[in-house]
Amino acid sequence: MSAQFPEMDDEPRREKAAELPDDDVVGILLRQHARIRALFGEVRGAEGARKQDVFNELRGLLAVHETAEEMIVRPAAKDTAGEDEAHARNAEEGEANKVLAELEEMDLSSQDFDVQFAQFQQEVLAHAGREEALEFPALEAGCTPEQRQTMGRRLLTAERAAPTHPHPTAAGSPVLQWTLGPFASLLDRARDALGTRP
Image (cartoon, rainbow, N blue to C red; front, top):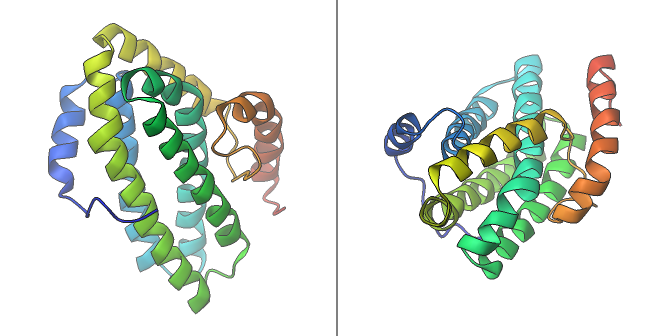
């Protein structure tokens, strides 16, 4: 994933998200992207247990966000933005999931983690920029407000049942997300509740 879309001011995104109904899929995703951007900064500025807590929040948000996008958004994006665009975003998410799984296993206090995390941040934010510049406008142009609101409600439902940890074998494939996701989610949520690592 190359950084084709430089970091842009978050204010226009917040304004756009605020204009959309709470259940509009584009508005939901824009708000989640803003939270992801903020969490990246918090992880980079934190230490010790705080760094682990913030990273866990970021990891969980990225896992459920990307799973739900692949399950709910990508099928519509194939129709509105084109199959190549949908495939490219799924491929990026598949790669990001692999890196996230590697980061999850690393010592967060190590320099290696910081170096890999900085590269991961750059790639994820570039991916989000491409979604915002290419995929979201196509969804807005190709779907009615009612369709986007239905998609938004389905996205939030999918997120509640999505895995909270990276699963590289399913990432990037909507079919595998639908097939393996519910089982992975049960295991992840049990692991989170017990505070255990894989």
